[in-house]
Image (tube, rainbow, N blue to C red):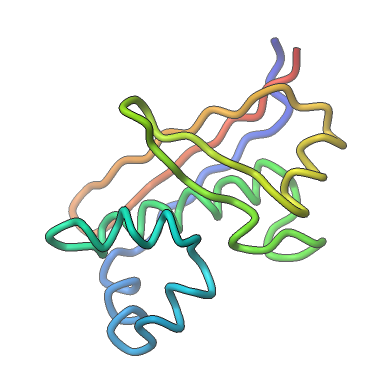
Length: 126
């Protein structure tokens, strides 16, 4: 296996808190999938989880080499967890780019420290 994509992002949790307070549901619906919203809003304080997922989406876009353009939408990248480490579910433009890169799998890690949520994404080939 070879690393064919690498992305990292650090997201300011207070900034996400401010955007969430100002735009609420509009912000959530623009950036996150229904499953992500349900998971985060079950938390006592949803903002750190939202910030972690935001950082993961940014890191994934960097690993894909697309940034916020070239046909990849926020909701094309979903962060989910099924009893283990967080994982990415790619759809739409993100999945098309992943396949065009001939990636076989992705690895995601998310961490929080004080006022930052950080995420790293590796894309691996066979």
